Length: 426
Image (cartoon, rainbow, N blue to C red):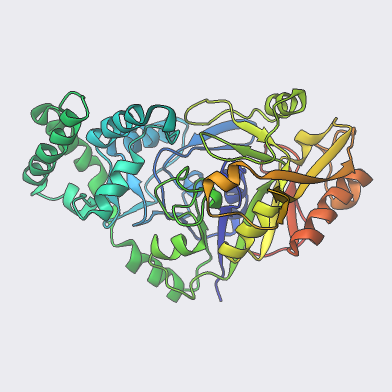
């Protein structure tokens, strides 16, 4: 029987999902991206080369893997073609990419509305990447969006004209410059011709893959704490990042996923606005940021840094049904005298052991820490758990015990071969 594995970020994103998905993709027949757009990038390093992906599934580098962009995604056609061209220039084939005919198309007017909305919010801005993701999902939910099946159809010019007239009214109201129909429709028709051969019924494709006992890998972008329902609202993204989103964003069905692997950074990072109880505003945070190269793949913005937060992790495990953990970037903590881990919050003299729904309450939470001894040794070349310094072993074991979920693998460097497996799950 074929197996299915869902890999998702268990924090606020940037956990190293791309690398781990690429690692497991060697065992997969199908890799599925089920939500988000080109707002979330991930970097993959192998054979000494670095590749930045934004829309494409991580299995794109192996032409024997069927790569699927699911119905839960919002796809910028221009960004997609640019990324495909980059992959081709690097010497890789892209004929094995399949795009859901039910996915939504992200247009220039979505990007412009994203920018205008953020400016309008001023000091209450969400901190989006201004890639148009939110406005595109808004149109989807409002039932006025355009799906890929219509984008590649003969009816596209008329459908786009009607849609753009409506969206230009919103742009004008917010003080922006209307988008010209004649110039954009011609470009989009050219892009549609390029994309059309890749568009198909991916729900039927996945059904057939299950029938043939294929190994299927599902990958999400960003992290569960940015989920539209379960994240620190309103400072979240606009799509479903949790395991539930993998079902609705791919059409695989309730029993289509066997294991849920949560990717957890050995410390905590966040991009944009929102509460962050364990955030560091000192030289330790600066040290981790520089050592871990914590700058956005897409935006290049410096990421906010903090100690590992187990309250948030336990919550993520709960809402995602995480069955196993991969701990990434453990090597970044090398050189610190001590390693602190947040195990609870204090809010107005009350101990909290889960994430509060209220952003205002969350902002006022004070982290309570357990302090462990740090390690100085270089761990980038270790090949097993036993080769780790004792302090690093204790760090891993403490996390496992607290969250009651096994850490089945951990990484000690950016290359996919610097991934140590403690237990096989796929």
